[in-house]
Image (cartoon, rainbow, N blue to C red):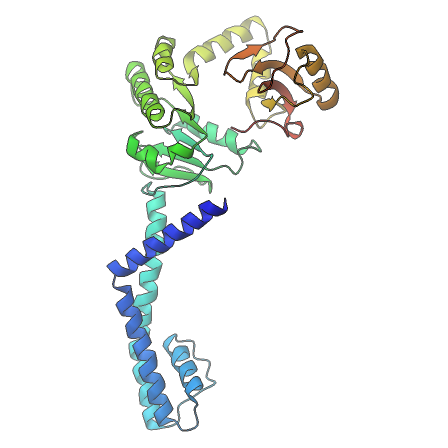
Length: 350
């Protein structure tokens, strides 16, 4: 965290130095400094009762239009110097402060318009913006693990779509350039959503191409992909997507299950929402769990944490739901559990 702040500060200083050179800010600063020197010397020469230090103080106070009134020229020459610094100084100082302010305004506008680059680490990259992206972001912010985590949005829209201090925007499609600006090499996860402006075939083709681009730049990042049709799952698998979710198929199966077993949809909605009751989490297997049977671990979790164990996520990436009672927990395994938020202290991050 400290290194990232140092790099950010160094980058801002570098950008400001470049901006200052481009806008001739150094020359303007030298003119202001020269005006202070001239007015200080003039006042010191014309006003016998004013020391050199007080002359410097008066020049700066007058130039900045503060005007405390603690030092006042009494001679004609001193007052002429005062008139000179008042009229000339206010213009120079106003130009200087306006130029410096424009640097920060320009940086803010670039951020809002998606023109900046970022150097976050362990962040999430969200590709595409639609109503589902808005719901995803809301779910992130309602989960303690994601409440303050940086999320970088890459989308072909005009400006940052929501007021979220931890959401950072890059304007454009998912390309090598935008992913590099999003610091993909240090991201933890990438979420790739379908483009609702395209038909199903084109939408999925664009998603597969985005996965290929992401995986070619960082094969180690965890990719979660949204598809329109189940037929294209194999293409995303060949592109090495880690998790593939078919929106229409998921909705159809949930509707069918809710019709046959009333109330199932309410259970699923609660488990999938960070805003309601119990949630799904993964917790790493502790030293005490390793070597124990799944039934023993499940009983212990229910007794000590009031959590229900549903399955095991093995270190090789395979997931086993409702494993046999005698299956042994191995080192590197993660236990998939249902638990309340406040009981999920060991839950793995996104």
